[in-house]
Each structure stands twice: as structure tokens, then as C-alpha cells.
Length: 200
Image (tube, rainbow, N blue to C red; front, side, top):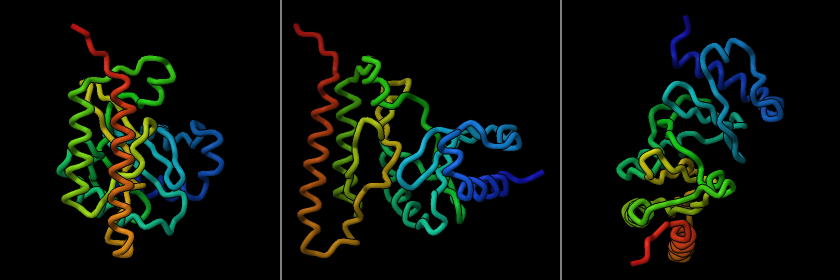
């Protein structure tokens, strides 16, 4: 019987080769993977994402994708509860803790998006505090990247678009910092429109 790590490696290798087919037919991968309880969650520009037990398994579409950079970013952001949590990685996959909940874009489409000031302020604190104390600047804080948990908390499920200011020329770092702040402000204002406040 394969170990979990071997199963993940083998599955990721298969998906990297066949992902164009599976993205058209996300539930058609072979029975051996169904039996291991891999569940398709979605995909972005660079990754295909599956659930495996209590993990979100992210598999790069291209085998030369720099997973080490993702690991470094996730570990740097680990102290803040609003971000996805790094668990492990290999040469062709990276695992984060699976977050229970519903994406905000889906809730918005179904006219079910109701948030609390407390949840929004907690997210805002984590975004601002982490950009001050790490090299990573929040960039893509959008409804499709945010999950509302059953407890009403907001979790960012993809930090892949965060900018690492250390990789920018010195003269561009301040401008990037200001741009990140503007994006955070815009996102927080959009979220605040969905708070159900009772008027005295």
C-alpha cells in the first residue's frame, strides 16, 4: 500500500501530464484516485487544486513551477490566522490545511453574502500587519479568493499573487507598498457593503 506522500506524488505526476483533459472533465480521473478520496476543488492560472482528507493539495500545471517560493511565502505568513496554512510539499505538490466554508463570490451570486464587522476587521488587521512585518504585499484580495467559514471568519485561500518586495528594485518598493495598501482599502470597503447592521 502506498504511503500518503507516495500517493500524492503519483497523483500530482498524473495530473500534471493530463490536466488539460481533466479541467474539461474534472470528475473523470481514474477510479484509483476516486478510491483515495481526491476531490476536485478548482484551478487558477498556475495550479489545479484538490481536496485530500483534511488537506488542500495544489498541483502546478507546469512541472518547473517554483514551489519553494510558495513554501517560503506560506511559512512567512503562518502567524496570521486569515491565511491558508502550509502543511507539507514535494517536488510536484504543496499541501495547505483545507478550509471549510463557502467562497464569497458564490455567496454574492446567490445573494447570501452577509458579513460581520468583526470578521472584516480581523482580516484587515492581518493584511496590514503582515505587510509591515514580512516582505509580502497583499495583492489579489478578491471575493473569489476569500472563504467565509461556518464560524463567520474570513480566510484568504490563495496568497500566490502576493508580491515579494525583496524581489523588486529598491525604487519600486515604496510604490508597490502604496499600491498594496490601496488594494486592501478597496477590498475592505467592498466587504463592508455586505455587513448587516441594525440601525438604532
